[in-house]
Length: 121
Image (cartoon, rainbow, N blue to C red):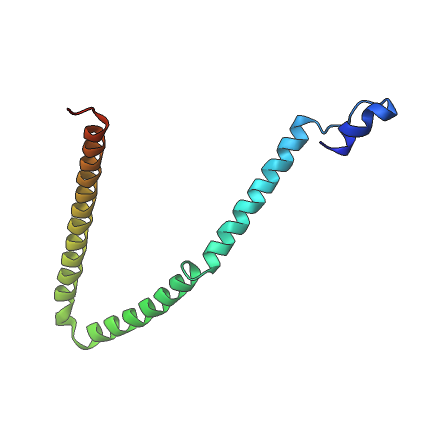
């Protein structure tokens, strides 16, 4: 119990409360501030910007090597484009297969739970 409600009877004054709207605005402000701090913390830890920076450095080096190779041997360009297309297609199929397997496992676990919930003689 807060001090305002505990001793208001002794002073013969009504308890002082903040209005609902400023209180809600204050809570929203605190929630927003906490969300921003958490996002900044996650972005600066090992998962976020560090990996992005390392990937961009490696990517720039790879582009330099790739374009240098194409300047020296332009006949390799169709092979590289074909390789990129095949890599994209294989990754897409693997992603679809993993989603399909996860979906089937989820359905199987739901069936098992439903079977266990029933009374069996």
